Image 1 (tube, rainbow, N blue to C red):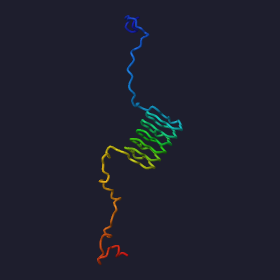
Image 2 (cartoon, helix red, strand yellow):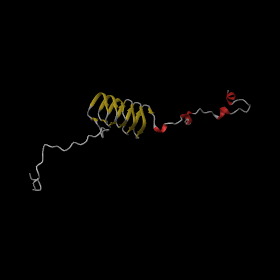
Image 3 (cartoon, rainbow, N blue to C red):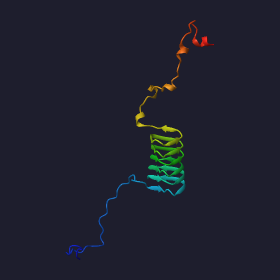
Image 4 (cartoon, helix red, strand yellow):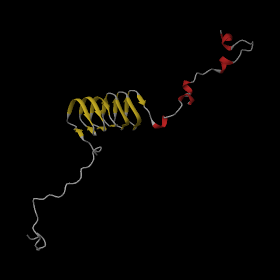
Length: 175
């Protein structure tokens, strides 16, 4: 048999043999998105996934995701979202929880957010309560030693503490 480009003959090869199999890789978190709901798609139900999920369409139900969730700018989600990390650029009606929650400038959320880290870009809209949960920086912190903000400290007015010229309290003098 001659080589296609060299004109030299090469020894015959056994065409039935295959190259040795590569060792299988161990399972790891997928790169990119394992599940994508396209912009023109509508889905109702419960979605559970161990991989990353991108939502660009309309979804109604619940999302239980072990990986990351990206809610695209055109997405309309009516669901509670529970995922490792959540980035929102579209509209979400429901509670959002994750280790990290990121609200991009076009995000609109009607629901409560629970996370150990949250970031918001200017322009993001939130109608709900934000709760920060166990963060490494708060471990071992004695909250009783932290002073209250000035607006939460009971204030006494100097007039109430001062005595009237005749020796009676200012409150008694005013009545």
